[in-house]
Length: 131
Image 1: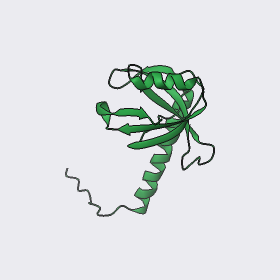
Image 2 (image 1 turned 180 degrees about the horizontal axis):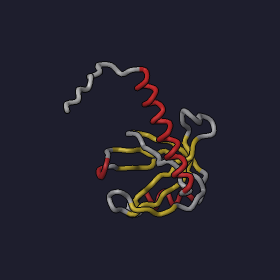
Image 3 (image 1 turned 30 degrees about the vertical axis):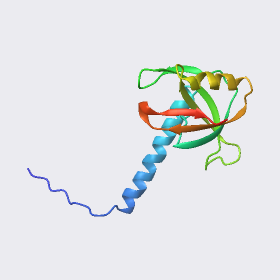
Image 4 (image 1 turned 180 degrees about the vertical axis):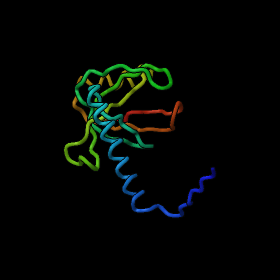
């Protein structure tokens, strides 16, 4: 038996609604999973300067997708959904990088405003604190 599927040339309203709903459901599922594990969404640093507040929370260790041990710091950053009070994120930093001890030293004065400069991506990512 041969089945012919009619090819669509435009996205229908039904499809737009389905996509929007799928995004909402997935976001809620992720939020619930992270909450159950006592975690926040990971901070996504953009190229250039990124400003946020380092919170006074002992970092938790995890293994990255590259097999590196990371300390996961809690930070708060202003976002479109939380422009005044900020939204909490987890910020993973490789424990063997010079950045890790700089951030550990900052914890002593936390909560403290921090500006991080990001260059590169993937394994070639380089981070530095703006003094």
